[in-house]
Image 1 (tube, helix red, strand yellow):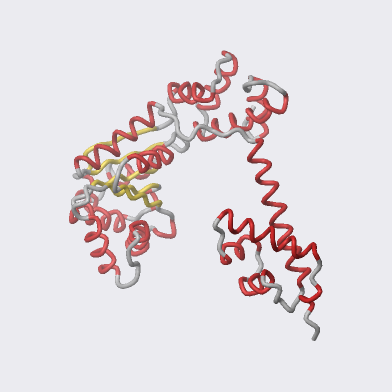
Image 2 (spheres, rainbow, N blue to C red):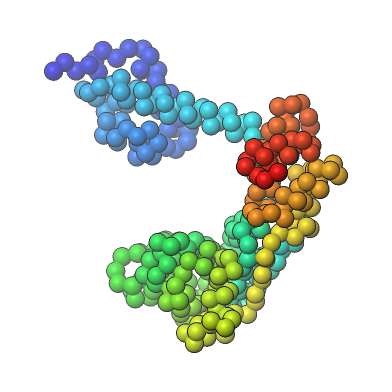
Amino acid sequence: MTNNVTALNQTEQTLQATVRAVMDAEGLSLSGLSQLTGVGKTRLSQWLKDKYPGDNAAIETDIRRWLESREAASALEGQMPAAPDWVETPSARAVLSALSFAQMAEAVSVVYGGAGVGKTTTIRRYRQQAPNVWVVTATPAVSAPGPILTRIAQALGIRTTGAVHVIEANIIERVRETRGLLVIDEAQHLTHRALDAIRSIHDAAGIGLALVGNEIVYSQLTGGSRSVGFAQLFSRVAKRVRLSRAKDTDVTALLAAWGIEDKEARQLCLGIGRRPGALRGLSQTLRLASMFALESGAGRPGVEHIRDAWQDLGGEA
């Protein structure tokens, strides 16, 4: 069989040079490139070295498709106005206070409420500011003790192999005397036994613990249906923060960060902020509205831009 690599034309050689330049600039490994392009790692390696004996044209097609998609995403990102990284709203300050207290007092805080009020973004902010903060996001797939302990171990960068009790012991050894804070986001997904396993880490290691999620988190710990099994955890909850929905003052803080001053536009945004999804939905709306404003030559988004963006994103009229 003739090795068609020897017939490479200048176009393919230029394409290879482009790919190598991207890899160097972004620190992209061959494995990473394989995942992004869908081309096997071995085939990519041979193609980059002019040694692939198979269908080079097929590889080129996949590579060009990836580069075009990358350029399109870069162009869109350049057009899309950047949203504020984080806005210190009153609700965000309440979350920060609960996290800080749990860490300093080596206590348990519970933050619960509706979606889109800034809980997760505030957790990220706190982790950037404070040392020894480990954030783990629970999902239905890790609702039991073993899986959630494995995810905690991964967040700590320690071994995740072995029996569950070994993983637990390794976690406790790693965090003991660190004055750290373990944050479990989306904690409503955890079973009673999983919550109790996390409580045991808090007790044994003497670190702060924050359980963050929706209303189910707190209803699991208290109320008429609270079982005796939850008593040990509930008795340790020192601070409770309920954020049922975004406050109007949260919305006005976000509008100030975006520079929205028009009275009619602000009223429209207040209405959006009171809907399900709250600040998350409003942030997405303002970002798209800012793009509309740029395209129309306006400096900042006005009420029409915001209304069009809200409807374009599927918001109710």
